[in-house]
Image (tube, rainbow, N blue to C red; front, side):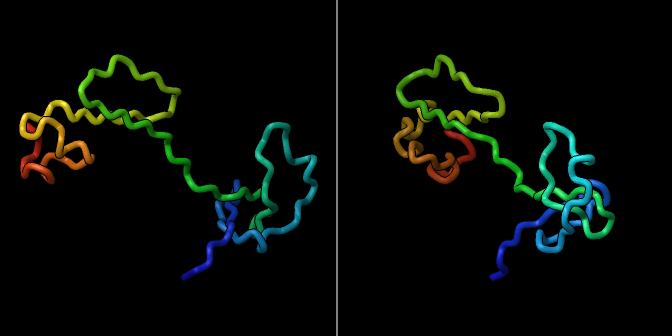
Length: 114
């Protein structure tokens, strides 16, 4: 299995480098502005700042399960995905078998519960 390495991408030319391949900063304070991301080093190809590559953030998710009731309201901050699983609408099993989170086709052999 390949080992995971931290990498950086140049903000100018786009070259991706391992952190140990980056050059030391040159004239750091004259090139950086207040509030900017701190670079990982200088690009070995063009000399511009290179920044750590971060994996994309997954959106937060809330699952609301309804059984024997009605959801009146769901409040969420921006960026949070809400998934509603309503098991009360199944006329085949009344939500008893569907409650495990299985799709209707897996439980009843149908695309949707009638």
